[in-house]
Length: 322
Image (cartoon, rainbow, N blue to C red):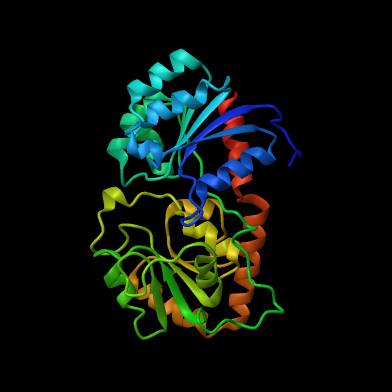
């Protein structure tokens, strides 16, 4: 990649800048800066005095834009920024307005409402692109990415941490759709973390340690399984696909169609299409340490080479500035 291909481009980034959660807002800001952009942040969430005084996102964003011109206003989701607000702010301050929406197709009604207000709209779910275009949006597909400096394997010199060592790990929310799928792994050494599970959620370095400490990482997208809603399942690979790859943990994931665009099945990731197949493939992987090492190394190499947040920001800016 060119060192700083977007030097001097002024970007206002609207996102949640949270070090405890998946850090996407901070990672996007860092990626834009690495590309040479001048980045001003606008916190999407209400915090501190903004919460006390009830300042809306539109009000806070207007204050940021009054600080100086912006070539691009990039919103990561922006559910509380109404299309009318986008139109009024763009009229007042100019710039190209972009939304990267991370929750398709689960919130498709919301995203198709927001999307036409922007000059460019990006979704990580390729099956949603046509729906957005039919609603009048200038929609494009853009997969999630990862931060390989934060999400990295532990140094080989460090002894394994017993707290995080487990045959299988799942990190994600507990719900009535996922739970029966995970029940198939009850006798194969599964440990689950996340909202709703007895062990609770994980953040920061503990999140990384949990992913890295397992022999195999289990990924289950929302709405997968017999109880899932096919209309809300979609094709997009979630963040966990890229996070597990970056950490260097071999991954078992349900076979979302977009995954094969980014990782080669059976070389960089192992896919399953049913709960029974998940259990069978989990047992096979746990019995084959050589294959696990090969999968992990190949996935990490691919993630660093092609799937960082910097790669995604370069693609987004290139499409936006055409």
